[in-house]
Image (cartoon, rainbow, N blue to C red; front, side, top):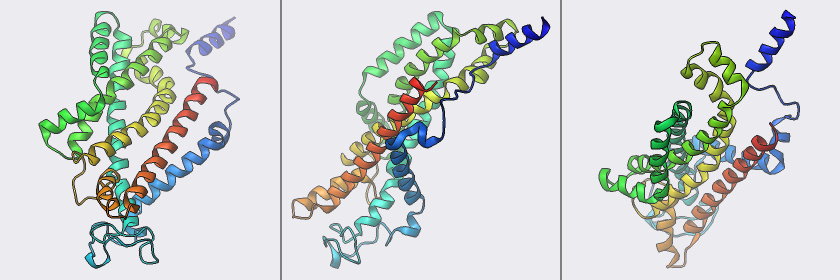
Length: 294
């Protein structure tokens, strides 16, 4: 009798049993997800190794070589100042990708903390916070970013702050819904009866079980953050010249395109499309895995 009771308690207190359907990473992500992950890894490795693999420094001008087409010396040609487009694409991934990653990381931490707190406290606190999140959620992210730029001035820090505020309600709403469902499970009641504090239950048990959902949503949101950052840089409000940035390169490339040299704008646009497409596919695969593979 004692062993059965102990076994029952162990089953109740266990957060989640391993799912035998979960296999290798490739099987879980599928072909499309694996390819998307590979593309992202290549971009991230190239970004980290930019000083090594870039043909020239990103901001080295050569007016005598301005607006040249692809050649052995310049695989993707040069821009209006004679700077190597390939080098600027490689270096340009740094503020674009790292800035977007910082936005998602900050908004994920803030949104998850808010969601766990209000889902556990409930009552009037939950209602008030939810209304505030609804108001912020209704404001376009670009508007919040423009507000931050108006207060702090143009530049990457202001854009990151504005987009973080815009993305936090999105994360908080999703995590809150999942946390409320998770809180209804038997193991939470068992832990509460044993005298565990709400903070301990939320951080040591709820959070690990919510982690796959948080990661999937964060990966999916990364693509939108890249688009927002690139858009603001295109408008001249984000990364400032002469720093290489994909959005800024599209803006610079448009002027060259009017002179019959569209390479820079096209290459930068394609880089944004490839990164956002890979992130979207990977996020969709992770979301499907959480929905059907658990």
